Each structure stands twice: as structure tokens, then as C-alpha cells.
Length: 185
Length: 185
DNA sequence: AATAGAACTGACTAATCAGTCAATTTTTAA
DNA sequence: TTAAAAATTGACTGATTAGTCAGTTCTATT
Image 1 (cartoon, chains in turn yellow, red, cyan, blue):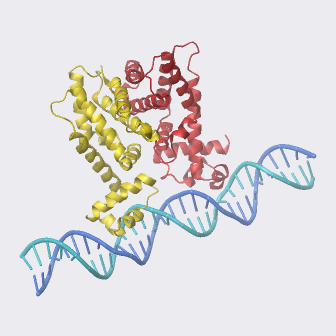
Image 2 (image 1 turned 60 degrees about the vertical axis):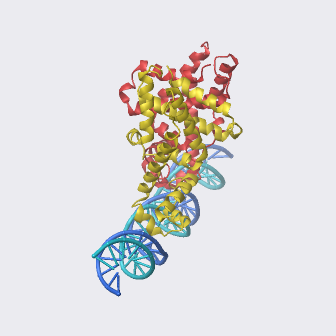
Image 3 (image 1 turned 180 degrees about the vertical axis):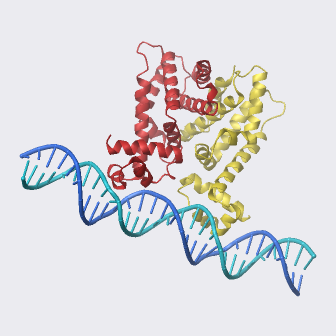
């Protein structure tokens, strides 16, 4: 594996474990088995490394979820699939979840950066369709998207604190009902 | 004002502006107009300062919201009042909002710490009552509370990005509807 | 007025960290 | 084969930081 990849994988892990600031770039390089200098060759500052990690994460989330949406599905089915895939991706990638929450609550983040990601654009399209079809509440699409994302976050946080429910499909369906009831007309 | 208060007020402001880690204790002391030593006299470590700030914030939120709940109100009215008061408190105290989000997404935080706060206990009582009365979904009360809190967060974040709606009571009521529809039976 | 103890000061330290750079190795392409 | 370009190393630096401490000032009590 090339060194850039090695740095990204290690950084993701260490940032999630100890936060951006408590993790020294030198530590990332060491644990990745590369030199300190090469980290700055690929990422000219620590901030850039952090931002690239976030962009990569959002793109992987997009790929993972978009692949599961079935073409002939109804709108509610598509939203359900998107919701469940997001939930599972976050459960299966706990480091990414922690990293994402830290990033999205840091000064790096704002709504414009958020809107640039394909994952968000895909979600916006679904929201707009749902509003047009009269299935979803007549509210700004971005608000509906953020509501759904927030509900996924809440669900993941809850399941992590109560792992006995994590494998229970019935419970997950109830979690989806919470989110769906919020946005449906 | 005593020096401990001065430190807390300044720390809250600087932490919200630049994050915990990018804000040096020496800078807090300087801007608060006190000596470096006195900061560590009152808060033996930086971490303790951060935690005390969070506890104080949650208590102020409790006081502010609890005061507004009318004794004879129905359950839905009480939840509405709590929701609206939370929203307004967060809008009026943007520094506290940023600080709270950073803290609750850091390693300092877990569900147990969360459950210790009177604000959360008050919310839990309302949720339990609502479940008993058959008004709210039969789900773990903590999940309903976290859902409501998450919806307040989403609403505040949205209003900050779209301030043209911030004074619009109709829009706020629609935001409440989103949250209410999620948890209501 | 005398005393004790609490509040307070600010210079200081030991450690840490992001980023640099001169030198070396590896890759590419002519 | 050769030479230029790209990748890689790791020791180093200048800046920053949490926390200390010896000494000073304020406050309360007798």
C-alpha cells in the first residue's frame, strides 16, 4: 500500500481515538511506519490532512449507501434504504463516526462544505422528490436532510450506549419510524 | 465580580471561538484580567475547567427552561415549552451552543455524565409521563429525550445558517412539529 | 495591632508539536 | 546507461503550552 494511504488509515484511527489536537502528526507518521517528512509531502498541513480525511469519509459513505438503493424502489423505500445503510455504515465504522462528529462540530465545518458532498446532494434529491410528490413536509429540503442525518446520529449514539439492541431489526425499524414520522407529511 | 467567574466567562467565550485545544489557559487568564496562577488555583487542570463549564452550562439551561413550564399545562404544552425554551436559549447563547456541541462530541462525554444533569432528568420525567399516558411512542425514555435534543440541535444549526427564519414564529412551530411528530404515538 | 490563612501574582520550566530542509534513495524515461 | 525528477528520510527548530512555585498582598478573627 502506498504511503499516502497508510497515513490516512492511521490518522483516521488515531484522530478518532484521541481527537485532532491530542494526536501529533509525528505519532501518525510513526504508527503508519513512514517518516515524518513524507506526511507533510502528501498533506502540506495538518489541517489539510484532516479535511481530506473528512472528504474521503463522506465519499465512502456515499458509495456505500448509493450502491444499496434499488432503482425501482418507491420513495419511502429509498429513504429507508438510505437511512439503514447510513446507520449500518456508522455502526461498522466507529472510528469514522467519531471523526465525523468531531469534524462537523469543529470550526472546519459549515453548511456550504456540507452541501458539496455527493452524499448530501443525493439526500437532497430524495427530499425534493418527496416534497414534490406530497409525501414529505413542505419545508426546505436541506432542513429535512439535516433532520434525517441528525436522527441517524441519535440512533447510532443510542445503539452504542445500548448495544443489546444493535442486532435487533425490529428495534431498528422503530428507530426509522421516529425519523420517518418527523419528515413525512 | 470574583475572579473565578471572570475566568469562566472568558473561557466560555474563547473555547467557543477557537475550541478547547487551540485556546491556551494563559490566554484565558490574560483576557479575563487575572493572573495565570489564579486560574490553576480555582481549576486545578484545564480539563477540570472544561468540565465545570459544561456542568454550569447544563444547569443554567435547566434553570432557564424549567422556569417557563407552567404548572397546569398539558403534557404536549410542557414539551412544547421545553422545546421552545431550549431553542431560544441556544439561539441567545451561541457561545454556549458551540461549546456544548464540542463537549458532547469529545472524549469527555458519555451517556452517564449526560444523565446526571437536572435538565436531562426533567426531560426524562416528561418522556416517562408521556409514555404512561399513551401520548408518546413506547420506546426507552432516554431515546425520546435524545431525539428531542437532537432535533433542537438540528433546528438551531439550521436557523443559524438561515437567520432570515429566526424571528418567524410560524417557522419555529413547524420545526417543533418535526420533533413532535417523531416522538408522538 | 497581631496573626494566620486565603487569595493572588507572574516569571519560569519541561515537554510537546507542526513544519522544514539538506541529504539520500528510488523511479521514470530518454 | 544516464540523468533528471520524484519520493523519502529523520534530525532539527522555533514556537507554544499546561502547570509550578516562591514570594506578596489581602482579609478575617482575636
